[in-house]
Image 1: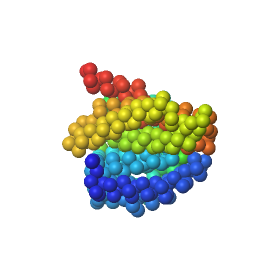
Image 2 (image 1 turned 90 degrees about the vertical axis):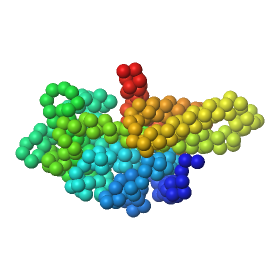
Image 3 (image 1 turned 45 degrees about the vertical axis):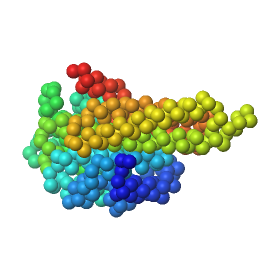
Image 4 (image 1 turned 135 degrees about the vertical axis):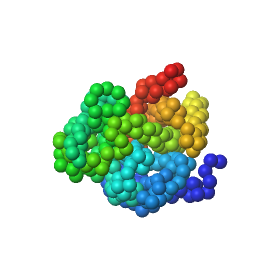
Length: 378
């Protein structure tokens, strides 16, 4: 209904890659994190890391429907860690370079990221500034043909394995939104230190790092856009980031119901399969209705994006609603599994650990509500 023959072919290609190259390794990667250079190179060779990007830099030059088709299939991955790492590469760390970068930046960083030869990360969050981006303390002071960067970043997905960071830092004095700038910071620069890989409750298949920067000299040519416009650029990029998570979450929620339905068909309690219990069937019916509403809202956002409209409010609504839906589904599915649902060996338990982070990462639920209320009321 929504995807043409070419887009369906992309979905099939992506699903085969997930089934053959990712899911068989997920149990191992949960223990050691996914090897992103190896994984991304395979994806780059298939053209999966630059679906909307200019073919001049190795991209496919396709539209948002193709991107959505690709993202939907990532929801079948057995855990949220690897889809998150992929989305960082395709929709979080590289869009600013594609949209605002120079020819040098696109050739040096975007092109190898699309090819899978470089791993990227977005470095915005700090120990004292998460959703409140304007409170960032990291500074980058102009000094000749360089900016001298000092500060730290926290909760950086792909941070351990990344070859470069798309990083926001304070370049001016005072308050306001025009005192921040966005940079490409190669990890190999002197003064860049990966402090530690953070020990998270879930999402174990992707690395999350604490980063330190001490007198790091960033070449002037690594400034993205104009000095002082980094905050504005990053706010625009957040919409790519948040949207990219929605199709993944929507597919996962439906997948969790499929897994659980199979379980309650086989699980016999008091002489009858659990699926015979009307209360469980009706709960699943409610979830499926919410998932269908979420999916249609995602497609509404895609249509708006295709028309070049501002989707800030709609993406914020989508993320807030998606978080509610997947939270209800994963909690309910664990409950339907009973004691087995609480065992680490069960796939449903992994999703239970992983998806709690969705209400925090990429913009907490409370921040989404604030964005929506401000845009609707003010």
